[in-house]
Length: 85
Image (cartoon, rainbow, N blue to C red; front, side, top):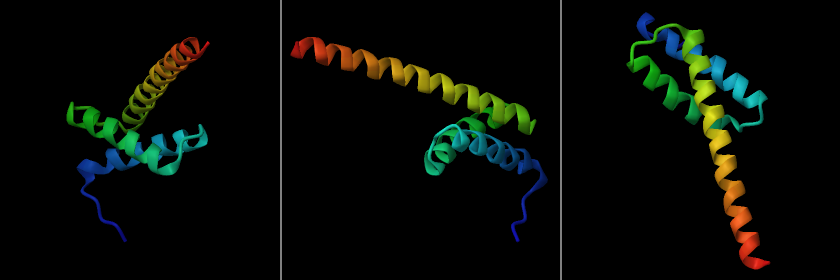
């Protein structure tokens, strides 16, 4: 049985929500956990204590990162293929 200080309960709830969503969206469990943990802890340390807000903000940040990564990857591939063509 895991005993958690009540102050940190929103962290665990938010992580459960965010990781569940991210895994259903195609992320691997480990990657989802790592990315969500990073953002949730940062938002928690900034003062947010509502689990759903922590999860939503983390998910939004992760999805924004994914879009930026896709843009960079696409640009790199375009440059590569232009150089080969």
